[in-house]
Structure formats: C-alpha cells, structure tokens
Image (cartoon, rainbow, N blue to C red; front, side):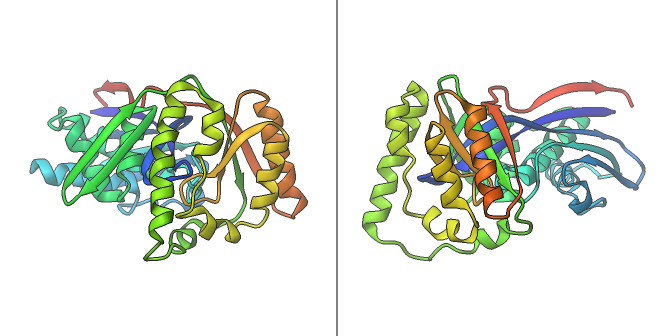
Length: 303
C-alpha cells in the first residue's frame, strides 16, 4: 500500500498566545509512505532542509509511523518514505511537526485507518509537545489547543480571509536555543496582559479587524526574551510597519517572523528582507495564505 500526505506549515504563539494557538499556512511538505518493506526503512528526502534531516528510523515521519503501529498492536515491518519538503526546519514554521503529522496520517492509512482524528492529534501532541501546531496542521485554519496529562483539548476557530508575510533570516541552529531563553516565572501582570490579548487576537482574526489586531499581537511572555538573539529583529519589524504592516510577531520560537498587513504584502516582505540584509543577515520571504484544509490525503493505492 501507498499513501501520499500533504501537510501545511504552522505558526504558533502569534504574539500573546504562547503555546496555545497556531495558524496553518499555505506552505507544504508532501510525504509518501509505502510498505511493508520487510524490515527495511528507506527514506528519500528532497527539497528544503534535506541535508539536515535524518534519513533513517530517526526521521520524524518514521518515528511517528512507528508510534501508530505500536498503539494499534501491529508489527512494524519497515517502510519506504519520500519527503518533498518546502517547510524549513528549525525555523518556527512547524517543519518538524509537519513531518510527524505526515507519519501519523500515512501510517494510519496503511493500516486501514484504525485511529480517528482525535487520537492522531493526541499522539502527535505527545510526540512533539506541540498540541497547537499538531491540531492546526491536521485541521487547517486557526487552532486553539492545550494539554493536561494525556488529554488534549483543541478547537478550530473561524478566521477571516487573510494573507500574511513570513520572513526567515538565515540564522542556523537557533530555534533550540531560543526555546531555552524563557524564565521559569513571570509577573502576574504580564500573564494577565497576555491572557487578555490572546482572547482579543482570536476575535480580531475571526472578524478581520486589523485595528484590533495591531494591539492584540502585543506580548510580554516570550518575544522580549527571544528577539535579542535575532540580529535585525527590531530593524525588520520597524521596516515592516513603515511598509504597511499592522503587526509583527515571531513565528513560534523563531527565528522566522510573521507580519500581518491589510494590503501591500509583497512590499512588506521586501522591506523586511532588505532590513535583515542591512545588518548582514540574508533572509528569505514568502507571502502566504491561511491554509484552510489541513492534512490532505491525495493518494491511497496499492504500491
């Protein structure tokens, strides 16, 4: 059997909603899985980040697939995997989560779909620690999620039509370091500040209210601690606003940045990339729509 799975990029936090909200975007990894291969694991990787991705059982696709086999009590008899990657790894765009979700959905289909969506999201959340990214990748759109023990709570929220700008400075091996920069305790006033803005952010995205969005993206819990490690962050954020953006946030832990704008998205993208270039940091940019489908199974057939 063979299954082909397309999974979108996801951006978590969106400013104030630390580890609780994520948005699926129109940038994709496409993963084909087939098996059994009678014990052998073959991984072929093409595209973005191919050189830095494990080509064996340590690959996130294979690890997630094996988790599905274990859960349903099936013997894992090997797998052939092909990854066509467009989502950069270690960027804040959910590349690793996308691969894990592809492995979960692909393996589940090879086994005849014994697991439902809720269970797949739960396994993905346990494997990655990112319930908001997993649910957004699975469902598309805006996802709000949280974990408590083995329970995963999630909901897909309505969102107005939206394009966003994503800019990724070439700062390699930075994401893991950025994840470790946060304090263990924060002032109560900062927590209250973020709770209110996270709720308003969801409302602004639902209504397409850019005036509210410009204030709701403010954050005190993670971006002030992370952006000093990204040379050019403030310069790029300022350039984005001068070009018409209403708000700029880190993508997850970074180093990618996301800008919200009513119009002139390509102008904002160019201004941000140029700003990074002015401080000696090359950067890539995309103008991306919100993905509204989530995971798409495009092919199931006999191998």
